[in-house]
Image (cartoon, rainbow, N blue to C red; front, side, top):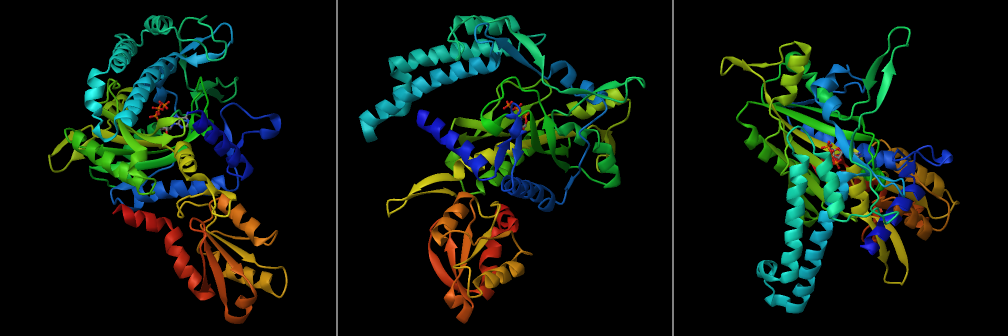
Length: 517
Ligand code: ATP
């Protein structure tokens, strides 16, 4: 684990050093859990967004996009339940003065029991080799059973506290923290305050005070912008059920514990799609979207073993199925995307609060009803982080050297092709520029003439550029160049006229999308 944390730290500093992610307002020492994307980060992020957007809007005739405003009428958040219930239970340690989410402290404790069990299993598996029967071991080993019982008991108490009638039972959460003897990681003490609810929405005011300013919120999710536009899109687009509305945009949450870099931010970006369907068909559509979304992730080629579904056993009162797609980050399997079957809750609430009819007239059934919704909701920044974590490698080379390389999927890489003149004379720079001038309309190219070729390769490896081309003496004679592949480091000679054909298909989002069908 310590080793993994080390790797994670390296990834964070790599992101800064190579212009992917900077702390916000860096010259003022940053702002908690807010980050800026640099010259390479923004390209990668835009490519992720494009991959998502096109997979929704281009590949599905019945999905259209919108771009709703961040500010929304304040009643939106009353109707959606966010004003009353978008809370996290927080607890302070009186000695360290640090604030924690009570639910996260308890979940971490559960993870510790799971880790202990896992360690026993791994030890035994090594000891018994091929003869190891994991199921039998888990059912009979004393230490495993003991930790499993502790886990089950804690899990039960936690579920009861979180799902208590009338809202989360804050006293019960505190009692669990005391009974489990959970200590503050900073002070090491158990000097805890009571647990309180904390609303995660940022507030601001619209209009001058003299005019009677009203409190408005920065949206904590993009979904509500879709729900309030359901009728507009359905009518003007003459959409027939089932159909979807997709949106990419900023969301804001005043997270209590913001850590793990861009995993949990206070300002972040979501890509959400609400799919409107006939009531009664939701579980089929839920299964279908689970499959489609998992395919979108696995299509990047990171290996199926790095993903898993985590079905929720605690469902919001309006949801009848929910799952997360989790990715193996250096700090464990973590949620990257949520898929939820939300019934007709949101549309009905908005109908109620706005006094408007928000329904669908079904010409086949000759009746009107409120559609049900399946939602797929993914964080751009978490997706970015998972890609970075998986792509980063400190590679030992056969000659004893090491190189830091980002094995980014070529279609997502910020720069697709770097062009180097071997030296700065004999017309090589001009030839290199000529190549770029021709190819820059098709994909992102970069010109580099500083330092030896080896160093230039390393710089391109570090930003994940899949191809480098070198213009040398021979180029001036026969219009061929060396083309070097980032992952294999192999080089071969190709004609300049062939470059576009070789590279374009491999680096285009289209090539990824074609694999989705
Ligand atoms: P978590 O349990 O980690 O707080 P959540 O279940 O509240 O997440 P959702 O409300 O389902 O998250 O939001 C959908 C997606 O938005 C998440 O899967 C995640 O990728 C992203 N997301 C949510 N909160 C944040 C955040 N603070 N920073 C970055 N991304 C976030």
